[in-house]
Amino acid sequence: MRIGIVGVGRMGRALASRLSQQGGYSLCLFDKHAGRRQALAAKLCAEAASSLADMEALPLVILAVPDKEVLECIKIFNRMTLPPVVINIATNITQDSLLQAIGPSLTAVNVKFIGHAGELALGQRPVIIVDKSSGSMATVIQAVFQTVGDVVIGDSDLVGVINRIAAEEVLIAGVRIENRLRQAAISDPAMIRSAIRQVAAGTLKAFADKDLGPFAQEIVGAVREKIKGT
Image (cartoon, rainbow, N blue to C red):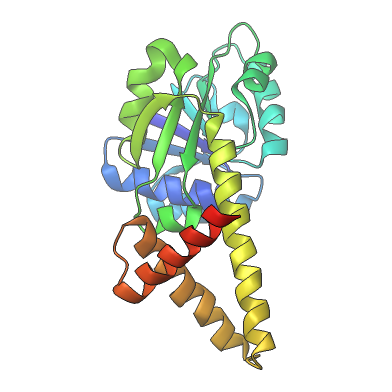
């Protein structure tokens, strides 16, 4: 199956790499930065498209571009005689806004990742929500994305809420850790980075996997009690 991927930044690159490893897919890559798309295409033995027009008649194209660029791409696909089915993975594009943007000959579906590009590149499997409006395309879309993560059919707009809450809370924690370390007269950048990247991130993953040690479990218990009392 030929699949187009528009945008080979962090998420697009990670997604293309994972799909290329599975076999059964022939990738056509486009990015407005010619050097970036050509380098990745050469690495993955994929085709480098010179424009979105090269993706006309492909069965499926995945948009891995920033929110503000999604609707611009949709406008171009709307003008095609044989447009592909377009899959948007940008978190903040709602299904309603996507449906309002497409023309009568274009099919577009939101497929969103409860995940992070860096973790995807490391081989982690995110939960991926294929929007419930996908209808007859659901089986094909699931087959493609199940090679990357755990796919469910549902309300893709929930991912925006989930990712925002998770990102905001962990960044608040990161800033607080940095501030508390500096208040404790620890200002070495390498030490602060290691505390956040190794201790904090590692502990958070252990918490998610229910694999905390006794010391960390005591802290969790104290935090839960504090939250309950506020």
